[in-house]
Image 1: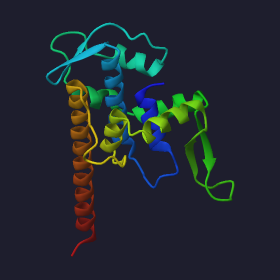
Image 2: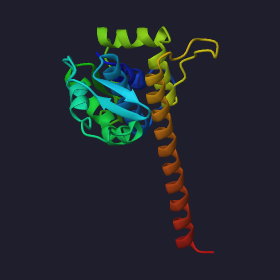
Image 3: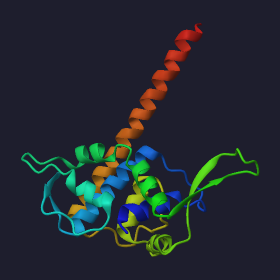
Length: 201
């Protein structure tokens, strides 16, 4: 399992009262992939650029896709640009992969057969591993969850990230999510203004 899959499972867990936007989650998943690639030495970070190395020794197809999608010619890609490019519809890709692996199931809410369908994690070793990392307030998972608005319950006194490259990736993901929120707010304001224009005085 990867940090991205652990993050997805935590975000989908139905027990806490939290709702995560798919765009926000996609950006954070792309950041989680970069952090896993950093951890295996497949990439390094130079300033705010991704410097690729070899291919990952991983049996995870999504992580392999991420590595294969790296820009390998100079000038190397900026982290935030890569997050936007890789993050496009990434949460849907992770949902499909986890459903295919039997890690997620679809359930209908309500008693009627045509009720709203929702996706929930299945109680598997994979889910238990993700929740164990979460319960232990593992710094990387907690930092990525915070990017999408999930509170880990960590106090300010607890140790944070101690790797400069990981901190850079998390900060870029946070900036991208803030930018996405700004775009949403701008569209909401524009839509309201357009509706008022048609409504008239």
